[in-house]
Length: 387
Image (cartoon, rainbow, N blue to C red; front, side, top):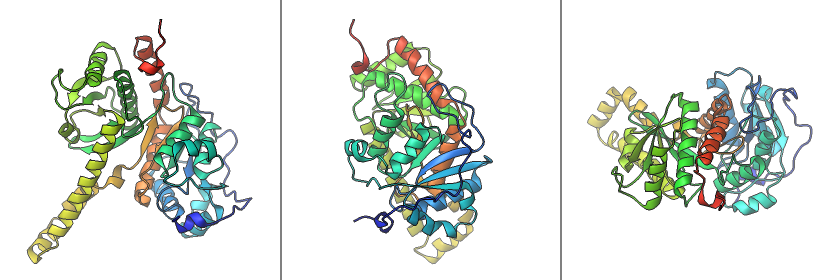
């Protein structure tokens, strides 16, 4: 059954609350990236996720409060009535947002092919289309992952010889945060595609964490060079041969991710998706178990009271919402996927990520590095031409 806000029908014209000047944002064309203009405009799918505007709009407000950029503005795409029902409860939000009417919502169970054929005019489609037309520098949605990737690929296209974008996840570690990709967009990957993931992951990590030369590893069942299936061994050889702007370490085992062995960990979408969801489940388990243990007796509660500051920090560290948001790497534009179940704080995190990426040249760097790798003979099998 659709959520209550999804059943609200009709769109109201003339809902403009804020319209940035026509020259505010230059067109985003892959490697030809304009300097970030003022205002920085982010396009939002207000109807995506499990809760729609009731979470998305407060998330926008929280992003405004914590992001240092002045002149941050938003295009909110969705049902005008549903958005207007939430807007009055958030002081000041109307001053920085423009409400854009959309004809429908892409449900969480919509197939990607159907979203490409029938999704035009929906809140998700319009959010991404605003990046294509140059009205916004980035789009954020908590909606259907497959549909968002398909629409992003259709409207923005992919960089160079890349067939499909890769979805990256931010993984908290003992040393900070590790970027893990792919986590669901590409189930089957040959060696050359894994090399592309390494290039894109390094560019992303450099843009977000300002690491001059990110360390990169390939997820495998062991660290020895003869371990694993042929594709990971071939990718290992290619990364050792190529002169890329990254520091390749070799293979990383599963426990090495949380240890922070590498800044970027590369794997196929099947393994990555299983790994990241397992980690999220474990984080929720530990938080729940810790809460129950510290409240089951009077001595435990007393100890928790004494250590409440440290416990609060640890709980925040294990909160998936604190690192919510993952961009699709390899598109000619910025599209960030938020968890569908994210709360306002988590959605704000995804917005801040989109804004930070909009202030970097990582899309152009990915295009340049992929072109260089292809020139050296590293292109996925389906992209190669036979002499």
